[in-house]
Image (cartoon, rainbow, N blue to C red; front, top):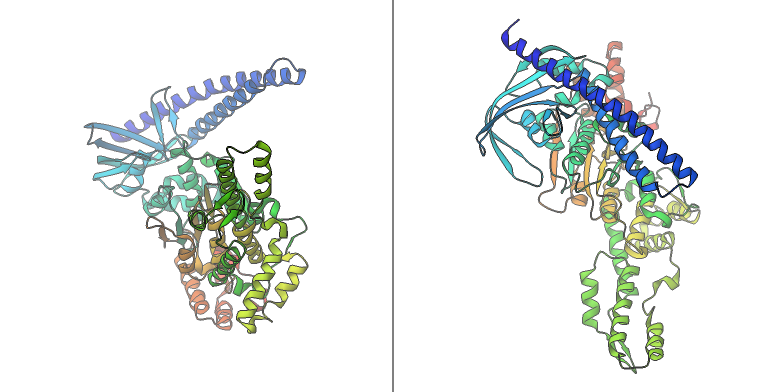
Length: 585
């Protein structure tokens, strides 16, 4: 055995001894905390004293101890996967860091194993040997000189091998991980994160991101690790409840949910897209409303141009029902000037019609109080009552479906040829039936006209399989959640709804990107498919891109039985409904 091998085995054994001590100590604490929580719970049941606050604190302490215990137990098997030796140029110190899936403390102050999400761990994923740097969130760049980068193969607490390389995740180790079953891959993916994936994971949270990734490029995994990274490094800014993962189906969301606890992520919301929009509308989405599958006019409604026309209509509706005017009382005098009204509307352009009316009514009330300061109290109260609802669209009792119909009528006046196109939708509105694009339209109408109070429940929205929906959905989401940042993952070549989903990202960029810092990423390497599978998929996609479904079917039929592995392994094949009219075999 080489001296280097012996040193590494000695260090691993030392780490394992510390971890075992931690586990023993944490198991004792867990038992004590459980007993304390149980006693406090019994006290509350008996009505003895005010123990509720203590119970909540005790439960939090217990949960923290159990989470730390889970990390240490996990580290017994795969203790760490990487090591970096570097010189900090600022402080002229040399450090050695062992990096693992779970951060482990040696004592209350010293770190034994660095958590993969820690800022310094990015050196392992991104830096080559020599001069480099890493970014500290909410801080600055730390200049370093990387002297060594080592990757370990550890299983069940045994060192199987290690590799020194100039890039993270030696191919031999990566291939070994990818040859395992899916459960093993999920557990080990942190050790094999590639540079281009790491760049997305560690990008700052204050921006919108779109990721185009081919099948097998790790889009979903990158999304999960990004959530974990942001919650770890920006815990003073975000709570898990402010994150929401949106997907197209329950199977995808269940897969995502199963991976979150392993990444130390809990209490993150997950919702299907068809349920997310009604959720955001809250009480405005009435129980009597019913969602139905996409209708034949959905391809038209799914486009950005359609929702932009709706915006024009709603803007006109606002101006019609809230014209710029002077408000003057014969006895009191000028209550609201045209200039003040214009300024209020200009400075609050994102507010709904009802919110603008509330603001203007409040300004009138303030003016009355100022002008009537020397008048009798009853006179002032009467004037305030008289002008309390000077601007009052609520009296019309508009609903979102009513305004939707008005919009369609407005469109028909402009283009009579669309009368037949939207006849079915108008009939469905009468029955309170809406497909997902209708729901998005109702949500935007609610936001622009009928919204009374803003909500800020979410700060980060992560959407997977984004290509399944038209760009207008994302435009509406951005309007409903103007203070949110979006991470959008998808692959336009896997779009199985050709007429309504996204076949390129240009429309989404227009709908979502609002500043120069917003980013578009490309993940072009697949870690799932063999060369033969990829070549097969390429032939299918070539036919599909030419809009020739019959040729596509012939391509499938031409495959030999051995090529069935293609159907079993590619996301494209798994997501296409081959019994549908367009792909009937």
